Length: 40
Image 1 (tube, helix red, strand yellow):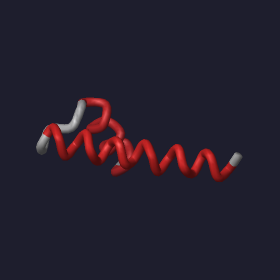
Image 2: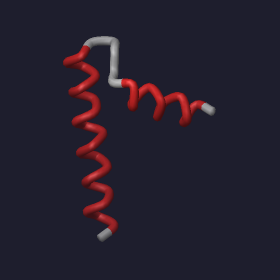
Image 3: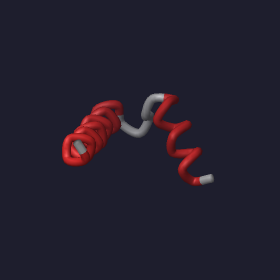
Image 4: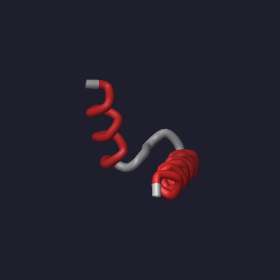
């Protein structure tokens, strides 16, 4: 269970990285919100 969850997390991060790379320097608003929350 924990292993699957970890794999899923890695996979989401991988997809997110590709999304950011393909959209250039303008990630989706949801990603910006996430980052903002993390920084705070």
